[in-house]
Amino acid sequence: MFFNRESKTADLSALIEKADFIFHLAGINRPQDPAEFTRGNVDLSSLVCDAIKKCVNETGRHIPVVFSSSIHASADNEYGRTKLAAENVFITLASETGNPVFISRLPGVFGKWAKPNYNSVVATFCYNIAHDLPVTVNDPQYLLRLVYIDDVVRTFTDLLDQEIKPENKQFFINVEPEYNIALGEIAESITSFREGRHSLELERVGTGFLRALYSTYVSYLPEQDFSYPVKQHTDPRGSFVELFKSKDSGQVSYFTAHPGVTRGGHYHHTKTEKFMVISGTARFRFRHILTDEYYETVTSGDKPVMVETIPGWAHDVTNIGDEELIAIVWANEVFDPAHPDTIFSKLDK
View 1: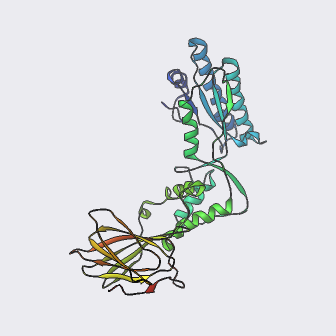
View 2: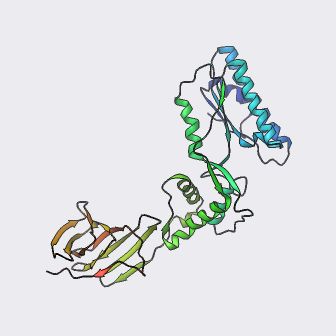
View 3: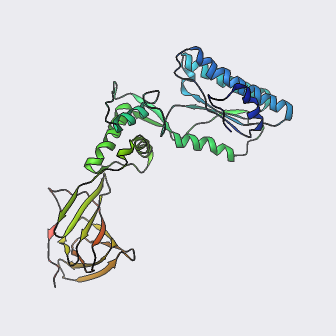
């Protein structure tokens, strides 16, 4: 059940009577008429609390409620004052009825589906940069307090699984983690996401703030940008395509080889690689550059096998099948043309 701006106020009481838990997330932050601050923040909260109180008094049943407030509740402005007043309405409810109340003073919330060019600078930057529109950063050092929408939802919904005792009349809850990020850093990171499609450089988007920011950014991409081309290097042996380059974990590519074609024939001093044949049949050969020790192995796309190159061992790969060979390769470092760490060396016995 939900109650939104299209709902009728007269229906609110009946909806609350059927509820087991209430998430009060509505509010007004940028109205055309300042009077809407009071109507949307204080008056609506009072209606919710009156309906809960009625239910408690008539049935003795408590209905836990989460109220999304704002860090601006401590600010001396109309928005902050009405948010604080709404908090006090819920605190009064808890004090008078014992009904559990959870208040979260949220900082800026970012994530998918936030409205750009409204009240979220992250949404605005993501949308504008994704659509090749300009962004303005007046103070790059200005620090923003932010939480990610998934963490907000997790924090709130986790309360559904907790045993809420009657003596827990009210308390404030925090969403973790909270990020303190400079405005300029946010703009630079989002810009790097866009440019990474051309440079193939992938930011550290696996954890923390950048994980959440990258997910947010791609959610604003126009549909025609859900896919994008990458450069293909083709010669008589087959093709080679770089997929992406990471900041500290090397790069991933793939190559093809026609039947009978041999690739490689070199060794590395430090660089290591992992090969996975996903289609066709390949013979990998290895020769120790000092001892002439020799080793070979055959893999195919029918059975996943990872083949790793070893520093100091020359290696090559030959398509010994009748169809095109396709293999994925990971290198532990991004290729540097000035220092390739690739020395030609034959494998023939």
